Image 1 (spheres, rainbow, N blue to C red):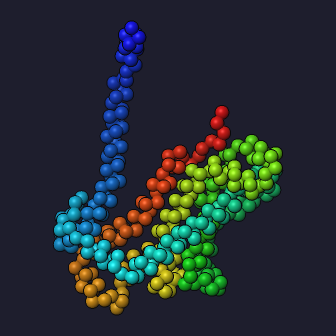
Image 2: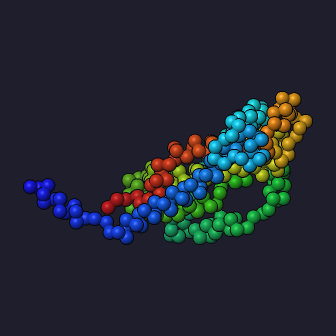
Image 3: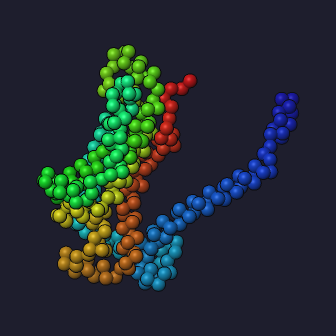
Length: 304
């Protein structure tokens, strides 16, 4: 009897024709956009595993032809690649940690009202102006040289220790944390440091995850500062090394086997293999931060 009563109700709750058409069109558009984003990357993967004859004759599209791993063998078997890889890993760990440390410590006081932090707007504009006006490459180089930081990992990390764009993101997030949480912590006897660690940071995990990924990608993809500040080939970051593989190739440093292998490779094959090698570490990091991105960078801290 109950099923007979509910059956007409379910039949009445139906989508309109316009709604169905919209859903179909929406799915088709999303699939096309996904293909537009993925197919170029698939083409890069196919070229990286293809023989130079098929690559030079433009016969490779979305599946490798003349399957070979010579390009990866050429890149991965060189000692200079692994030394640059270690430098990039150290840079990401050290630089990312410093970025988060300074961003959080700077954003927390700047998120307070003018009553709690006098001249807050002045301090905020002091940091914001650095996004618009920079000293330039030559003054930065002279400063690094005068401090004796050339040819060290600190020359790659310290100039960007406080990324202002990420600071603005964290600052805006901290401002949305209800003041009731902070006031309750202060009433219970907590100081500002304990309030930051036990109140602000736990509710800011989505923002921290987003900023962490921004910092990691920024340090991992940086290559120009490695060309300016690093002189020892064993200390250059990976992106700088991968650039030099093709553009500034030094044949004198290549062994006979390396030269013979390089002669059999197509220029595009080596380039595509570099892209894959440089992308894999970032793809390995993203799944660990994905669940925080699903929640979004802006979350409420109190549920009614």
